[in-house]
Amino acid sequence: MEKQIIVGQRGWVFIGDVRQDGDQVVIENAQNIRRWGTTTGLGQLALEGPQPNTVLDPAGTVMIHQLGIVARFKVDAEKWQN
Image (cartoon, rainbow, N blue to C red; front, side, top):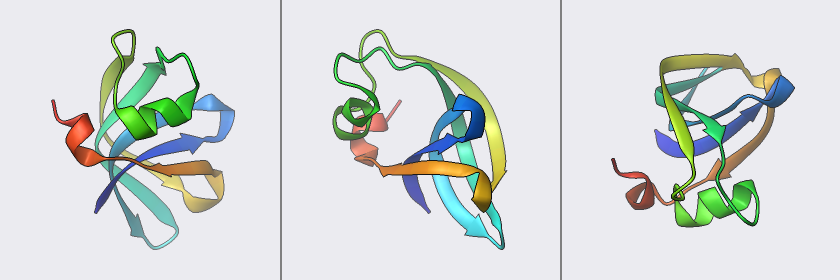
């Protein structure tokens, strides 16, 4: 598993431990990124971790069909430690 930010269709954005299971992308320990709280976009979260104004909501385990994925960002897992 690798910690990633996943952008799904219709604007859903999650962070979590990602693995592939057939045609499903499974995001464990998922959090919905409700508010980015960045000054330079979503890439800032990938590079720097959550910002003071970032809002995260616990989401458990999320499964998205691989065709429903718009973008995937690799992140520095250490910057996303709780």
